[in-house]
Amino acid sequence: MIPQHVALIVCVSGLIIVAGSIFDVMLLAIIAAVVVSVVGLVTLRTRISQAIAQPLAEITSVTQAIAEGAVSGRIELPQTASSDAIHVADAINKLASRAAQDIDDLRRLERVRSEFIANVSHELRTPIFSVQGYLETLLDGAADDPAVSQQFLEKAYNNALRLNVLLNDLIDISRIESGELKFSFRSFDIADLVRDLVEELHIRAEQQQVELHATLPDEAYVYGDRERISQVLVNLVENAIKYNVINGRVDVIVERDADRWKITVRDTGIGIPEEHLPRIFERFYRVDKDRSRAVGGTGLGLAIVKHICEAHRSSVAITSTPNVGTTISFALTQG
Figure (cartoon, rainbow, N blue to C red):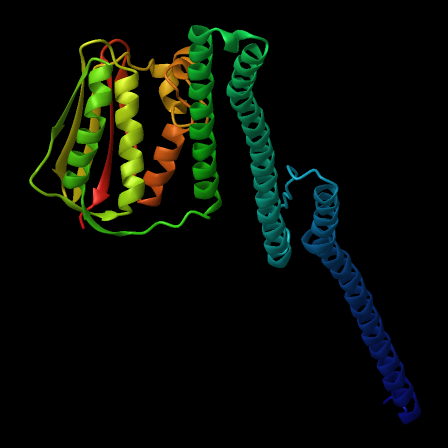
């Protein structure tokens, strides 16, 4: 039989061993927890860096470049970036795209403005110099010869008329493009307008040895600005007469097109080469510059036609074949 003090010593020794084992386990658990926490923090930091820090650095770099003028730059973030960073990047990219478009538009407008000023200067210079030359010749003594003076005065007068037409066209297109020109929309009979127009231009057509005809319904009411549509028709019909051939023909046709009235001006003139058709409605664009000036064209008529038709929510369609003729049409809403 084991003495009591020996048994007590054995029990205490066992408890110490067990306690030591528990302490080791707890220590290991604490160490493991610390390791896991450190690994988690490193992983979290990496993920935060990928999701926020790196995207922010990319956003900052590209934004600074855009601010310095490199508007073509775009922010490209990885899939690991945070949704907020992606939204910010998308917003900045849209602003950059809009800025790039605005800059392109400004450059285009500046180029158009420069071309316009150069064209205007050239177009104004020609008749002014002509008038000046004829008057100087008269002042130098040609006025003493009645035949010469009459001829030079007529030429000076014709150039003054051309200058007046050019200035009126410049004023019209400037007012239209700036929005200053106000349209007066109302219902009117386009067939009646064409009848009056054909009657007015009939003599001019005869002088050019061109037949002018109209195919019209009894009435055709449309909604638009009667004065401006008259300006469109005068431009189209006069061009069809001027650029026609001897014994040629011009037809003005008004016909129903669904819920609209279609107006067509067709001629048997010299026609327009296909490569020129896309630019035919540009300001001062001429297919044959010498012929255009010889017949009194300003180079603005078709540009004015295009703008007026667009103000009526209509487009101008054109087809043409050299040495066969040209057909131009537009449509107006029924009034």
